[in-house]
Length: 193
Image (cartoon, rainbow, N blue to C red):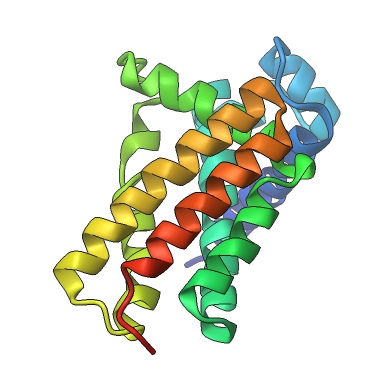
């Protein structure tokens, strides 16, 4: 890569980090690309250059947060058995500090499912990357690969559903109780250790 190309990549990464922080602090609301650019200390043209559109920027913000969450899951899974890792991971996902990012995720997910071309790239790997991330620890715990992938897909669906429930209702106690019940059911399906 040329020095100029490296500078462009570094600029994009800097803007993306700033956008992730901005969404965490402010949510997205109905802000225009110009307003977001001003808050990030850049121009709307620079955001268009790097991300194509406001939705393109938000898709990259979501992808960044999803990647960070998968990294956290990998760290937890390396240190804990899959069930304890799952409990600790849920506690992190349910943290109100992440809610602006999670609301953005569900907003863009809905747009993508409706065929919004700017949001469609979000669907690439939106399930499979998580199934792979969750299946690995299950396989290491002795679950057959095909069963591990099925259980992982169920875990993704339940986790996202309960997260949506939490964001919509704010009923932390009920949602945490439901996740703990699911976790116990999930644990019962694991081979004995």
